[in-house]
Length: 313
Image 1: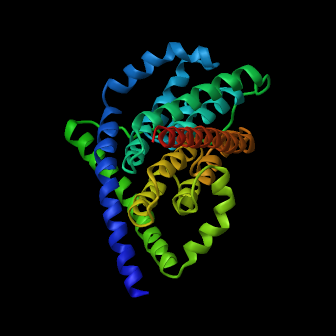
Image 2: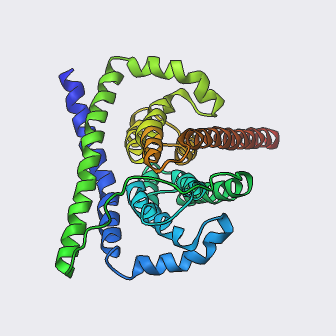
């Protein structure tokens, strides 16, 4: 047990360091940009496109904040606007697929998944979901409600802004470490006790349906429940120790970029008065269908290539 804890601690620290090298600079830069004309410029640039997806121009504010920062920043932006339930639901759906893009894409790339795959899936699903909801849902015309959440702190001076950025970046790494290090210890203990082996066997039928091998189950479930960053940490370790293939990692991440941190990312929207159960079900169903389609095409292509190789011989 002591050896398992020691090995898990070292693994957790190593993973936190690896992911922290992505989180620190991105958080610092984006935090500082909040106090410059850059983010307002981006918001003004995007605003004219909002009408195409059924949103008013100022809806660009929570969308930019959510994609550059996180869902909490996006909700703070939503609560400064007069929006209907339908408009908030569209924003929530888009941001459920596409939020915290810089950090989450960065940590996903640490597992070997291509950046274009991550961005194509996340941004594509966000835009597609907005168009479909805008065209299909005829209700939700009443005004959304919620409890006010504080805006970004008023900070003046270059030094103070930089210090605030550094504190925010270190805080982000600290929050990651608080979850990742104990998680890695728990994973290591479960490995040594053979619990993960039993867990993988139990999930095998579902993993097979999604086109993945059972050894991808642990990072898959971690990402689904806790989020991409923490799922990436477990997946990096699994790739090293459990020989999770690049193909399975990519397929797992295609599912996870569409549907991850399902508890937190769903409950956070409840105060806004939108229907959160459809929000969860749409994400889950989209992730399952998309993953199955990608895995089917990938596996079929592999089989064709193997047959061609045998025929050529």
